[in-house]
Length: 362
Image 1: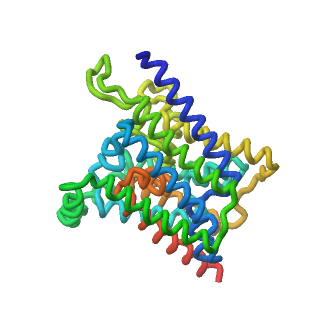
Image 2: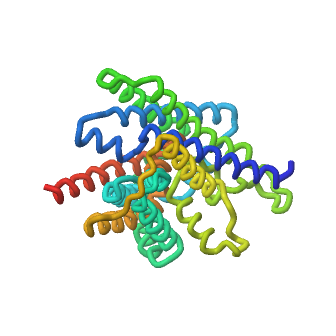
Image 3: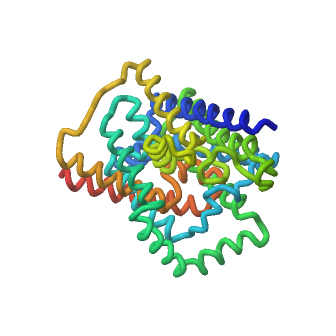
């Protein structure tokens, strides 16, 4: 196997996956916060239905990959980082509040940037910088202190997972559980909101993007034995395991690559290419629909909310090992119990943030 050819294929296909995701997300207004806000404020579950269909499609894709032994979910970041209940719940809560303050998650900010929204540029910059200093800088001490508190919950949480793992693979159990719950809510939602063919196609295509990422990095890019190290290795991923759609880490790694391009240890990874592809996909879609609109902050409070919210997303996203897309689609598609905890916490944090903004307006 020509490793260099495989690496080039991974980054190019990652760019293509991001291009498709950015294009269809801009067209469909796909947004995790938007689905929560629409339901909370307007009692409209149309975008929530699109998210649920995307999740169902992602889980079915992962199920096929695992059945054919093309993906080992346990090697992904959502199972191997050693964190548990406390970091994921606290990180998710902080991220959710920040997401509401910024009017969207990092994925939404990338899409908005493609439309010419300069607020999103500031949000991505602050989120990326905060993520870097949370991983390896000043905030890393606070992150480690929070992880140390995990010991309080560790025994109880580990016993729950051990209960499922004794007779049954926990990832399969939670993946099936999430699939059933998502399907029930989706079909219940169909009774209230009809879904057209375009939205069905969009949901299936987003799920295909998630599954394609898992196949690309988890099967095609997996070496059982690297010719130099003689160890198994996942090529071109920053986490060292299989990856799919996520935007916290890639935002930080893209900034690092821009700042330290001459550093030989920095490289164009799969996640960075997905990030860049999403931006270009959104830009192309906005260009076709004539939806390019240069926008920036007009009020001081708006700037403060976005700045603080971006810091919250950077810190909370690293603590929870992913954003609303990273945990809400990618992690849940694997059946990660940690991602399930993070998503519930993100939703709660998002509702707290929306409530805060409502009180400020009124």
